[in-house]
Image (cartoon, rainbow, N blue to C red; front, side, top):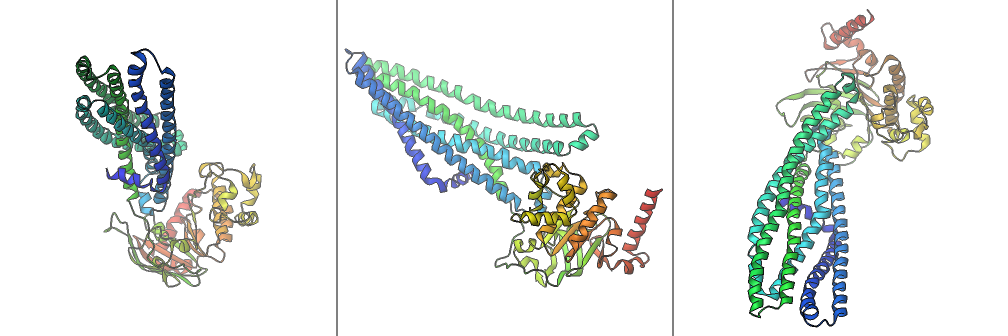
Length: 581
C-alpha cells in the first residue's frame, strides 16, 4: 500500500477542500441514518395505530432526504475536484520528470511506452482519485452510521448481522489481489498496444510503400486480443463480487428475520423497530456492494501507480553539481581533454577513448569517419546530453560539469539530419529557442536562412501551421526552418549533425547557402557524410573506432597515403564516379 499513501501525499495541498468533503459526507451519512430512523416512527406512530402526525413525519422524511442529497452533491463535487487536481499535478510532474531524463534514458524506451505511462496509467489513477476515493470515504462513513443505528435498535440482533462481515471481507481481499496483478499485466499490454499504434501511424508512408497495411493491422489486432483477454479476467473478478455479497447479505437477512420474529412475538421488539432494523440492514449492503467495486478500482489504481512511481523513481538525468555557476559566453576555446565515454548500461564498452583536440573560437571543426566511429556521440557531449566517462570537456578552460545546464545549452545551437518541428505556426517554430523574439527578428532569421520567400508562398505565411514534424513542408524547407531557429537563438557554438545528408542537390544548395550565414562568427562542429562540404574546415578530426586517428586541414590530410581521411576521400570519389556512370 506504499503507492496508495504516496498518492494521498499529492492531496496535501488541498486539505481544506478534503475537510469540507468529509464534512459533507458526514451530512450524507446523517441523512441516510435519519431516513432509517423515521421508518420506525412511520410504523409505530403513523401506520399501525390510528394515523396521527402524518404531516410532521412526512416533512421530517423530506428533510432527511434533502440533507442526504445536499451531502451527496457537495461530497461528490469536492472529492472529484481534489482528485482531478491531484491527477493533474501527478501527470504534470511525470511529464516533466520524463522530459529531463538523459539521452540514454530515451534510447532504451520507445515514445509509445512513455506516452502510455502519461495517458493510460494516469487515467487509471484519475478514475480512482476522482470517483473511487469519494465512494470509499462516503460509503464507509455511511456504513459506520448504519451499524451504529443497528446497535442502538437491538445490540444482539446487530451482532448477528455483523457476524457475516468476515464472510464478505475474505473474498473481497482475495479478489482484490487478483485484480491488482491482472491490472498490471493489462497496463503493460496497453503500453505495447500504444507502441505498436505509434509505430504504424508515424511510419505510415513506409507501411503503404511496402503494402504492409494488412500486416500492421494484424499485428495491432494480436496485441489487442491479448489486452481483451486480460481485461475480461479483470471483469470476471469484479463481476463476481456483487452477487457473492448479495448472497451473503441474504443469509444475514434471513437470520435476522427469524430472530426478530421471535422477539416481536415476545413483545421485546416493536414492528416499527424491526422494520427500521431490517431496512437499515438491507441499506447497508448498498454501501458494501459499492465498497467491493471501490476495492477493485483501488487495486487497479495501485497497479497503475506502481508503474508511475517506478518511472518517477528513475533518475538518469544529467545533474548539476552543487554550486554550479553560469557559463560566460565563449571567448577562446572548446577543448576535449583525453575524453572517454561509455554508456551506463555497458560501462566496459567504450564508444570514445583518449579523444583530445581543441577548437578555437570562430573555427569550423569537421568530424569525419565511418559509421559507428563515434562522431554523433562526440558532439552529444558538448551540450551534456551525456557526461564524459573519463577526461574532461572544457569551454574557456571551465569544465562543463561545473556550470549550469541552462547556461551551457543556451550557448549551443543544434541542427540535425532529422529536425524536429512542432505542430504549430512557422513563426512559433522559428522562435522555439527564443519565444519572446519580435516578428522582425523572426523574419530576419528566416531571410538569413533563405526561408523567407517560400514562407510567403505558403497560405497563411508565418502564421501557417505546418503539421506534425512539419510534414506539410518539403525536406529542404523543414531544414531551412531549423536553420532559422538556430540563427535566432544567436548561440556562439553550433553543432551540425549531417544537416544536409537527406536532401536532394537543389535543396542542398539552398540549405548550404543558409548554413554559410548560420556558421558566420560561430564556433562550429560539423558532421558531414560528404567530405566536399568540409574541405574548407579549419580543423578536421578523423575518428576511427572511437579514437582520434588524424588531425589537420584538408590539404594536410589528403596527402597522407593510407591515412583515414585519405581513404575516406578516395572511397567517396569512387562512389561519386559510379553514380555518374
